[in-house]
Figure (tube, one colour):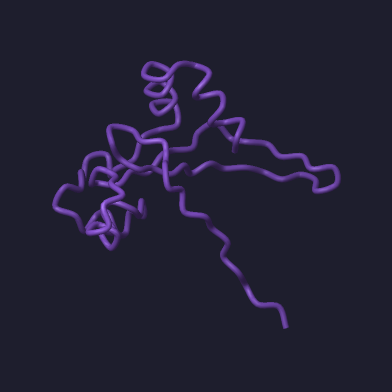
Amino acid sequence: MKEPHVISKYVNKPLLVGGKKFDLRMYVLVTSYKPLKVWMYDKGFGRFCNENFTTDITEIDNMFVHLTNVAIQKLSDKYNDKHGGKWSLQSLKFYIETTRGRKAYKKLIDDI
């Protein structure tokens, strides 16, 4: 019997935006596995934590620092109902390119 598995890796030194951790939600269509052919839709978004990232051991259980899930973040007093802790992929691209340069954004996308 096959058992489902979730594979993830915690990133110790994540790319931060405004001191906050984020993840990307990107939509892709896989049209072939051999050879691998993947089409990426350009309307993804970034989800942000409400608290600034820290490696302080006393904050290791603080979900608002480490987990970007909206279901968790909306429980924070700092949650913004207007934008829901999300940025469009275009806004994120603009921020990264203006603060870190075009090469940084290209590397981010290429690494994905």
